[in-house]
Image (cartoon, rainbow, N blue to C red; front, side, top):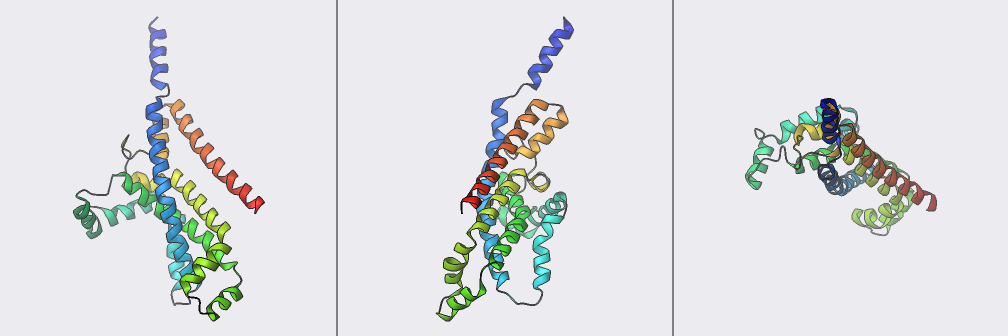
Length: 236
């Protein structure tokens, strides 16, 4: 009898709490929806500037841009912690402006996602801009077109496929970001807990139903995004 009661209590403890299930998903989607446009915009502009630059040290800059893709996420998170912490001038300025530190808040998760997904956007847009016929850009310049006009009316339309890929990659990477987010945003349920950190805690505590539910949700969202992108490529 005691064993049966204990079994029922254990099963109840491991049952899916749908309210707790939705909180990390909602926050992860919010972070991804905010981080992806920011990263795509920054990565696209930087890639365009670098594609037309012949400055010395360009290779060093591009290497620095790609570092978040090869560094361990915890290293990226540690560097962000130093940069945005209360003892840094930037962290102090943010705290003075917003009357609270940015560390261990959900906007910190957005910053982490922007940083770690930037190399994917940059590389995708760099490839897209490199595929543009340079004669078209030269013709635009010869007709008096400004760099902004060439970017807006020539480069972006021709690199539209790369732009879509960059956005999808950024969204998926933001949705799955773990290490850097854990370092600077923490894992506060209902406040900064995203799906990857929630899965980690669920597995660590033995709550496999919740871990499976969150994993299935992330896989489903990522699959749909990649499938839609692939279909659009085939139709274009």
